Image (tube, rainbow, N blue to C red):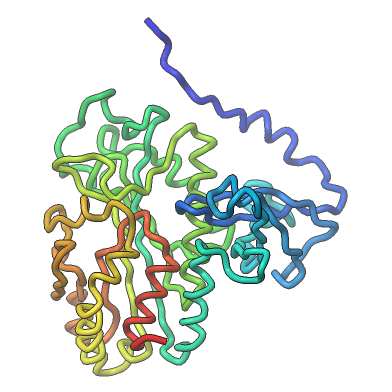
Length: 358
């Protein structure tokens, strides 16, 4: 009988070296998003600690190896836009989130941050606040949900959501490690919970103002992959990782503006609903790949073909929390985005739609 393939982490051995003196140098991990929504990274040595992105040099990478450039003109440039303390190397070492730019001085076609930031700067007076709920699934190296019987299924959904106890919760160690790494890095992570499908979890980031939302969510995704790497577990952001009678994974997007948070804000929310309905198809187009398998009108989702909203309705496109309806002001939740959607595209098109374009 063939042995089961395993991934062994040598982190314990690595830690013997992590306390070595860096002789005043700093390791800066440059992180960016590739052509298909994966994180990429590489490390640069800096001569001294830095406190601002303005002190960091531009860098470049081979875009033909990430799907972001052709082989005959492969240099893509990394422009630092945000820095975070590094929870793995610690000390003065940092994580550097970057935008991708082409050699002609234009944003790379997969650089969705640039346009989102432009829209948010134009409409800064609206004071957009966002909070994103990132659902994800933990998989073994064989691609099957971690902890599930090999090639089989656990008991039906019911005991797993916010569950406690063996057989109800899987991979809490990874989830806790990620939570602490985010807090160390200054990510505005606001909570975690086990989700409806076993081996599926959610964490929340926010509230964040404007472009900070996308920055913090992308860095939190990088940290999740990086933490799971040390446990030999894969992270999936697929919106419907297991077909059949199992919940999918979303990226529920909570939105408020100065108008919705003010007295009488429900009127602003209702006006926004009309604008969102008018551009439903445009939103769906950038709300994630494979979302049609998730937005079926079942498993706490609305239909991908129809826009709907309601108070406390988890089967609608938009949910208005009951407390918001009671208070007459607050925020709304866009439940349409898939777990693999780009937060810059989500927040960017919401700003564009609610503010009536450019």
